[in-house]
Image 1 (cartoon, rainbow, N blue to C red):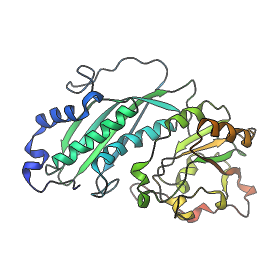
Image 2 (image 1 turned 90 degrees about the vertical axis):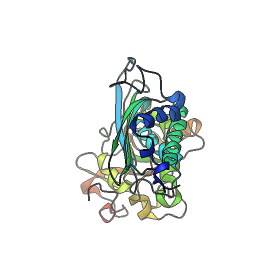
Image 3 (image 1 turned 180 degrees about the vertical axis):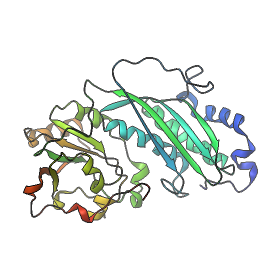
Image 4 (image 1 turned 135 degrees about the horizontal axis):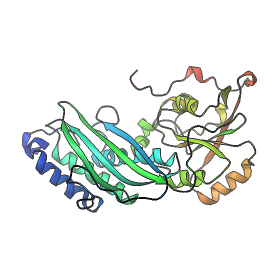
Length: 309
């Protein structure tokens, strides 16, 4: 479905801002609570939560994160799932969201309705309420930015800092080919897996793979070390090669580190009992820079997605 309407009668301009916001309320349905806890005031009022809160924000932009080939319901779901994946990477669980739209006046009204219905379906699946947002005009632009609130699923929050030299480097699922395969919008955020990993004291650091392994791995690398990754261990998606696995990005899998003190066979047995349909792979270790292995992948020849490049 095309993002832009063929006639002005089918565009968002035909409704105007006030009627469009009323339509958005209808499209969201039960996902949008009534005022003062939802759309309709200058701010949303949220109930207090116990424990530490988490917050993240991610956009979807026409021409960057989706095009005419991606169904609008899938675009709406992708917007929320990108944020859910960030929460998963810290062992969090979602609570509420706000959404800011930037629209060309010629944006197709039916496309936008389908976008919101896809977002709403995903929000219901993950118990997220959409409590507010904003609509702004920008000629030639169709974009949405969602801010997601969450909380720790357990007593521990995982961050990107904590790995040590000798720790194993592990990843869930398969890598590469996200655009070609449609995985970039069909993916499942690893919320349950992230919460489980946060409960394992031997898991030392974690992030979600969005810009490609070759770039994202450096955020986990301890000072004075380098990732010793074995090419033969990379879990490739069907039809993908090493370059795709390292550079394509938008995998939305969890990349985490496991203490060298933990028996990996026991870890995988526990994992398989918890998640029998999702594989986890050890792809290498962090080693001292001076102890670089001859068979280690040279990541300098690969690049992930670089914003503002």
